[in-house]
Image (cartoon, rainbow, N blue to C red; front, side, top):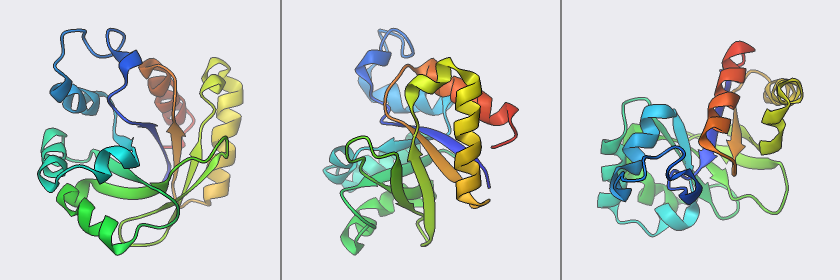
Length: 173
C-alpha cells in the first residue's frame, strides 16, 4: 500500500476559473473534482451537518474507487459518527483528525479499524520537487508499508496533480 494525496475539501473558491470552469454549477463540483482526483478529505463541518440523503448523493456523484476521508473533531470516530457516515458505503475510506495548528501528523483510522498515517503536506514543497520527494520518502518509511495520506490543505489544483505525479514517478503510489 502506498501514499495517496488528498486535498481538504472540493469546494474551493480559489479553484473557480483555475480548475473549475467559471460557469460550472456548484452542485456539479464534486463530480468534476472526482474526474481529476482519487479522494478527498471532507471537513467535519460539511459532512457532520449533512442529511443522509446528501451523503448518499455524494457517493452517487463519484466514480467507483473514489474515496471519502471524513474529518473528525478529535480522536477516533464515535459510533454516532460512524452511523452518520453509512450512506457513503464503500466510498468511505477513512477518518482523519482535524488539523490543530501546524502539527503535521493527523491521526487517522480505516473504516474497519486500524491506524492510518496521515500527514499534512507542506504545500510549498512542490516548488522544489527534490525536497518534496525527500518528504514523501520519509512519509512512506514512517508508514512502514501500511499506506499513508499526504493531505494538502491549501494550494492550487495543479499542485495536487504535481504531488500525485511525483508519487507515481517515485514508485510510492
